[in-house]
Each structure stands twice: as structure tokens, then as C-alpha cells.
Length: 208
Image 1 (cartoon, rainbow, N blue to C red):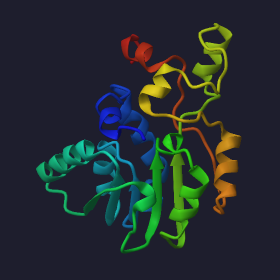
Image 2: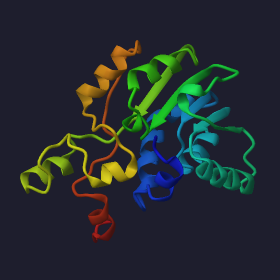
Image 3: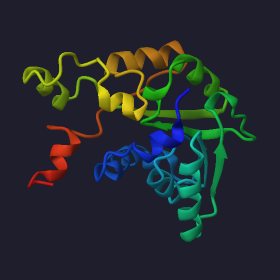
């Protein structure tokens, strides 16, 4: 079993964390305006941004330390429309259904992905949506890594993946297959962030 508190303490992608989640939220903000949202795992700032758009937000996360930090921030900002749940995703039982269910940078951490997606389908209201964002195994910077022999294979998990608790590297096809096998219907798929080089190099570059 993964130590989620330890992963949280050592997880971040530095200055790009907020950018990743802001781009993802921009893609769906019109769809979630004044709607109810379930967020499986929080990046903290993602929940703060969602709270400003949705009518209510419910968060499920297995890291108590992360939820404690999120609560501190929500309290400091006087945000009242967010409910926090310290729970394993598979053990969680919501009291209400949701218009939108969000897994931002979450599914790549889950071994039994199809079962989880099947389970949360019952949480969705009629006409509800599921939004998933995952790192792309075939991103431009990973393809360049293969060409320069920094990486041997786009799908092989590296030390950084293991540090972050990743169990799979998705591409567009494998993600869509996972979604369809769980009974959801994939309506659209698109990229949200173009990476030319790893985060560490982008943060020290002159164009950032």
C-alpha cells in the first residue's frame, strides 16, 4: 500500500503544478459553473479554483496531511462550499450525486482503474460528466527523450514515476480504452499542456 502522506510531501512539479491544474480547469469551467463537483484527490489549488466556479465541491483524498493543509487554506480564505473526506476511493460512499466527477492527475496512481471508474459511475447524476487528466506517455518531451536516449521506452515507469506513486503511463488510446471498458462514453479527448522539456529544465529556462 502506498504511503500517501509521504508521496504528498515529495510529489510536486514545482511552479508548474498550478499551471497544469489551471489549464485543466479552464477546459471544463463552463461545464461546471454552478454545478456539484466530486474531486478524487486534490492538488489543493485545484480545489480552491473549483470552489470559485462550482456550487459545491466534495473532495476525497487518502492523505490526511494534504487534507489538513487544504482545510487550513480553505479556512483562511473563508471558503464554505467544500466538503473534505479522508478516505480510500473504493471505500467512499457519498450522500449525494454529482454533476461532474474529476480525476486530475489521479488515475495513473490506481491499480484497479476500471473498477474505480465503474464504482464512481453510480455517483454521477443523470447527464453528469467525468473529467480525467493524466500525463501523456507520448508527450513531445518524452518522445524527444527517446530520440536522445534519455528514455528507452515511452511507457516504462522511471524513478520519478515511482517516487510519485505512478503505476502506469497512459497514452490517448489506453486512456480511452480504460474509460470505455468501465462503461463511460468518451465524448472528447485533448491535450491541455505542451511540454518540450522536463519540468526541471522548463523552470530554469529563460522563456518561463
